[in-house]
Length: 191
Image (cartoon, rainbow, N blue to C red; front, top):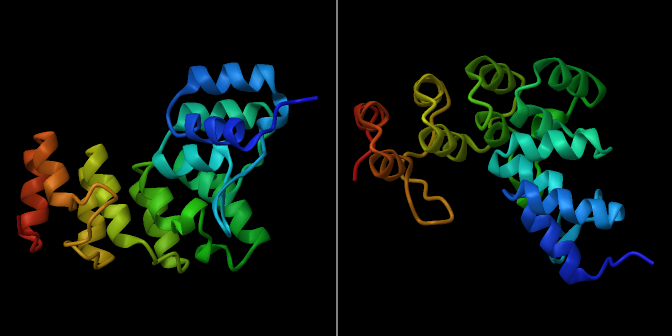
């Protein structure tokens, strides 16, 4: 009988956020973990692939997809899979309002891909929630063109803070990304 204890499920989902070796090892030992969600609190569940999707771990997401995890819209967006995103939106016309784990909006997932065209297309289709988080992802990952598009078109809250309490500008400064910091300051971000 497989070990699907809450502690083991939690460990697998946490590994999905950034530890490919642990994901591989745990899945080899317990394949049933693949699509088993962990409930962080009532109504807030997450699978390993959803964890990979909302923190921008494409290698882990691809590994889990290759083993049979479902390709959800937010994962496809994080991976920058435009054709899959278009197909999934055609199948689910209200998909622009999709959220992943923890209620994280589709636009924020798409920003992790760094694909300005994809983000712009999703914005035009109605995926307009999460612009500040999307900008933060762009700043954290050094996606300057995407950050420029977001501040010019999406009106993100430049004072929004991530789970570490940092703004996009503070993140850019901490990374030593002067071009990103200058862009954000030029659009009104302050330290």
